[in-house]
Length: 251
Image 1 (tube, rainbow, N blue to C red):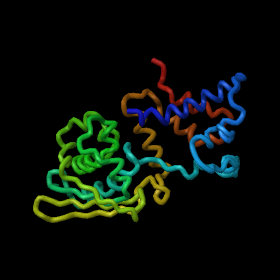
Image 2: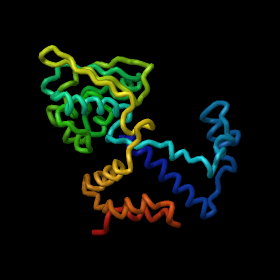
Image 3: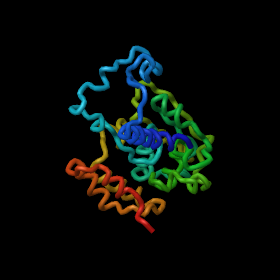
Image 4: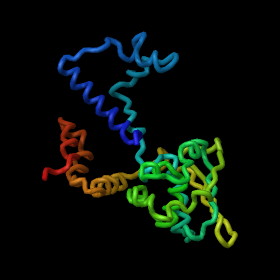
């Protein structure tokens, strides 16, 4: 549960710190690079100068990636492979008696959860992801919800899936091999999953994702003006306008 809270809480703390500083709230003079600052306490031989190198010139945000699916990023190539197996090879969950996932060791370390108990846990369960994608042919918000976890299809591969660690593969790649009831095998390899730096989501993909997020769960947020503000953020003097548009409509 804490995984979903941590990122938002870090952002909230950053905003709070800025607001307190604006009002004269004081703290350590060198909270990051000082002798007892964050860098010295949390690491060894940290390069404090790197914090300001290229400041205002190099934007790390341009190297950010966006998830195409609502789950752990290491599952992206697995889902891509299973979508291809479902739609292109015609494989259905009921046909499968065994599954093998070969990928970076992080794939196993992060997603070896045979029977997740909630939608949150299903977001880091390879067993759930493979089963639900082969059953439904999609991997949207509904497929990683509490309701999806409760469906009998979700647990079909709890005992029938195994991992093969392959450190030579990047976290954005994986190989899925399925054994079918007739004894045949189907295999798909994904070298670079959608959403990686090599295959980034398009603007249209991001627009659809925003629309889906606004619609799911009845947020009350109108995606059209929000998207317009985001695509033209560099033209506005007040970035806070985006936050106003991201809030649910009153009533």
